[in-house]
Length: 337
Image (cartoon, rainbow, N blue to C red):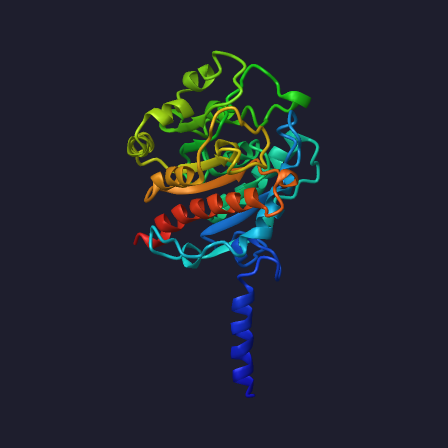
């Protein structure tokens, strides 16, 4: 066998093995691994943080590793859009945010912000796997608002899919966390990173403890579509509402897996089984509502791998949502042109 034939056979074998999640070095979607976001269009990031949500079991820091484990054999072709998102532009997995003070939530949020400032300075758009929902606060402090490159110093609009508002203001989180999973959607508005009047919270439902639980979101100016509202609206009207509210703003997608029905995603913190959540097709459709808009990044949070089924179904769902967020960015930055 010639040397050229051997190289060809090796290349074909590697291409086949790349589709097997249990083979090779794990990276998000089998993307190349990079040490820094320099010269990237999309930076894939793990945010292994779980002390911002101390009222529940705290295994969300294992989320990034779980998604890396299963994402190698996720789909590559985007059939609805007719393109290959992972083959557009420069996309790499730049690893995990270092969190040496893992039990100190406030220190971790500051570390997350420092890490993502480097991504913002490089002009890369991050797609992140958490981690509990407090990570979104640290990320958006870096990539939106004054001095942010990705928003040109302006605020960002949120497409926030969640069972919960995360707009607590008057109550410290359990264990004293202030920049917590319950507070980020409030303090980001007060600090000038998020324009609530151009943002939507969709899918809110669950084990409500107070009749006025939505009041903080309304006061801050968010457009709220509860799960009950959603079920009474035509899906096309929800999509139209999303596009109308966001308009031409840069948009960030934050996806809490607890917005999904527990039958779809059983391994999440703050699980809400009392009211049906989104099916996966509904959730993907809502993410696709921002097709063609200036999506600067997104995250998928609250995966708890220690509660997952043996076939890693929730990790696979998380990977599917992250792929869809990545696809919106890839479409905006490359494919649509």
